[in-house]
Length: 331
Image 1 (cartoon, helix red, strand yellow):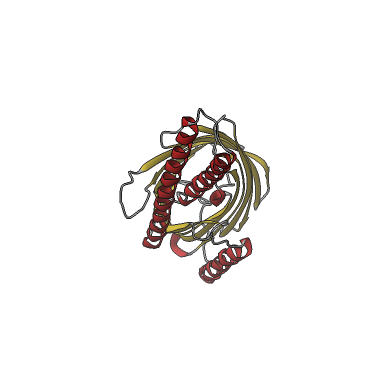
Image 2: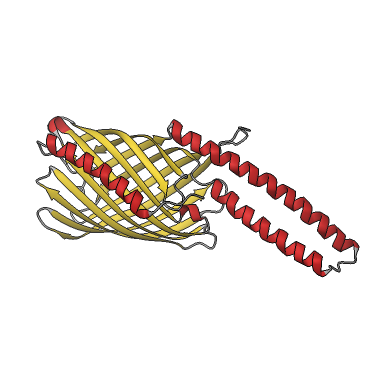
């Protein structure tokens, strides 16, 4: 597998952010609500709802196909080794279950090869996402607490020349709340506990608990910056991923006539058997337009469109990208 350093990926992300911020600072003009900042609370009695839809581009589909072909080749090797092992086991059974030293050695070698091929097969099936849909609603209980829930839907489709794969559906349901720890004029600190259910296809559900700390800073409501750290842990008996640690960065820049630029980056470190997912980075860049609903304060919706990038830091050949559309509504 081809490895990629964290430095090289971070440089690419940093340069992209630099270009984005430079463009936005040239156009910066008027203020608008902080609808995109996840650290800020919405007013008591108000609702915020937002949904996103993303799909993959042609480049990602081609990479998926390459890994799909590699997976099929590994499955063929597994099948041949399994036949070879069965023949060897039949010979031992015909000898009243007594194996020679050479047969014992061959069994160990075959078992080791099978284990390695299964691990490689699991890795080749990584990053097979095709479409993702998320819907989140948040409510301001009072000036210090927001309560929210999120429903996520993801479709994976394994790509290969055989074209035999049916879509695999995974679902996620979150319940979270934000509690204000500290707030000044331009600065806010919130703690965000969360519990969520992650169900992949028809496998057993995995329950996670998460705690996050968000720091937000606003420059005259024209620019906001968010930084967050979080830790998640699976508390059910069967989990492919045990623990997740992450750090996120978000920047929003307001332009003329209700337009805005938004950038979000999140780095993940996971404790999981699949090495491809152990370290990854996700980024999205959006161009947004805010539209007020009448003359009422805090009533508006925001339509955003852009691109996302999702990449393994363990192996650079595992990555996805494509268009993303988002809609925010606050009432």
